[in-house]
Image (cartoon, rainbow, N blue to C red; front, side, top):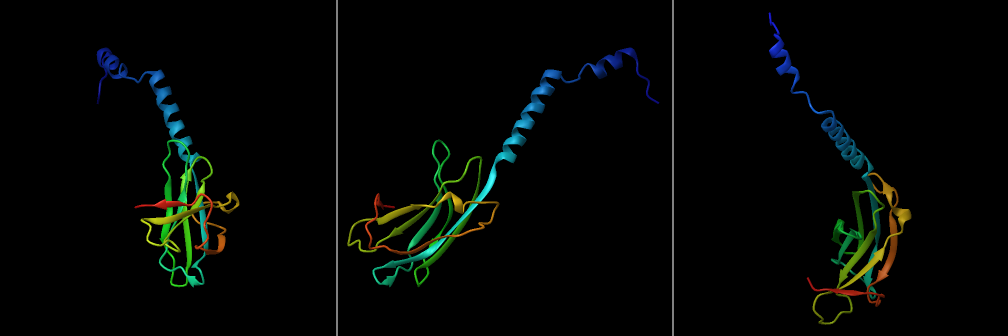
Length: 159
């Protein structure tokens, strides 16, 4: 049997948390939970076939990126190489507050001579191909691209 004296009751109940601290903690937890829910998982997929002239462009590096503005760094969603027949398919997903900005990039040496590095071409994927969730519902078919083409805003990747 425990007997509470007046002194022990005062000590027991004097360590109650401050109501302002409790409110702040509650609001902070609500904000963190709200941000976690607001981060939507979004996915995208792209497929196609690359050729160099009249031959399949096999073994060409292809990447699917989410290019971000501001302090958020760009994210690689998926990457790989074209098959022997020049075909590829990439799919990836990312959690973000706003819509992802998917970009398909090709790194190649087609019709490049002996220049250092690789030609780099990028294509924006339309927002209509962004799906909610972890799996892409639609695939953007980029078609057949002849890499001999000199694309506008083409760059060189020296890495």
